[in-house]
Length: 521
Image (spheres, rainbow, N blue to C red):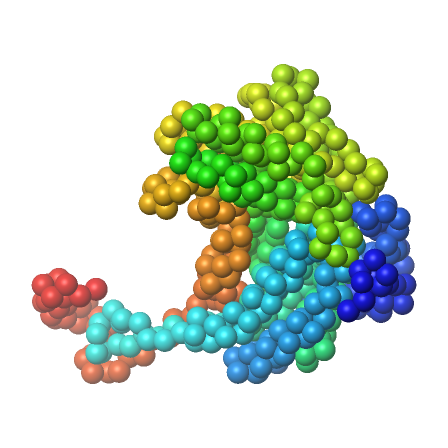
């Protein structure tokens, strides 16, 4: 492979145009999309309209009928071929991810690897999860009951820019594995990455109408999508998620919403402070904090706060920041000018109200137009935006706690509950705290990667961090409606008249008592 400094990045004009040909966009309008690497325009992105969405959903409905009838074996075969195509095109996917998001090569690799894991798991597990089977009937022997699963139909998926490939895979792939079709609204800053991922599935044989991608304003395209589909998946802000959930509720369709987070990390007094500092730095500033499950609040036991703080400051004092197409950088760039503005606003608000910078705090235009140093604050207090609002950027706060109980109370003192983490030499002690934390996932001796990468386990939030789960059995079951089929075997006559019920009721009471005696459900 050529050196990253000398080779041409993937989104050459011809490559970008080729990918954009797959976008459902007929409005004739475009918007320039800059790259965080230089601030220059990466691509002029076509905009979709509400009519484009309706057309894509109509075509997806037709394609979905044949796809559902194709069966699990055919879907498994195609998804495994897509897995091979993703693997073969991984370098191009890494380039696109970096150029659109500004993250490092290593953090881009997390995305591609997640897409691989999700694709393989759903290919191999969909049949066993969704094949249904026998259930206990209301009158054993006389009646039988089975459950089968029916694909919901057309699924709408709305994904953000920050983890464009992995978040698309975690919603789109299980929907396809369940027999559904998908119309996805990709964020402008991640559309090329999504289209490149989709291309791997099309090359594997997926009919193009089964996974359509649209772009455009949320007020037009996002609203139209929620109006048309049979189920909606959304990843993004809590405010937007509430609006989507309300609309889905009015239409009586299901919704899976992964929303904001203000995730807490607890550092107990028995840690190796150097290891804990390394874990905390990665937990807070992977992808420069632009990850739903990254840490923004650090709670450190008083006995180790001095040593831990010194180790964390030392680790972050001379950060290697960059988004080059190699593995030289440890920390990437903020993705957009608005992200930089949000980080600055939260930082200025905190400093103006008495917080102080432990490390970082500087914009780095010498590295990239929106690059910012990983920043940790002390002396944060109620009333500061950085304490209560999701920053979603290169900013974390460090606070002192006196014991485990105070750490749990502080971590739970948030409207959000997406992810949490505990660092300790004692797994047993950490697990005791984990059981008391109000979060959809808890990581011990790791910030987020343990739960995020466990595609066999559900992922999602509690409180204002969302409803529903992706990944695992729960992630697949979102996309299918259970249907109960019962058969009367006519072994005993079921009652139809009042006299019939009178004669049979005594027998049924005997049966109820017998089942209670033998402890059967």
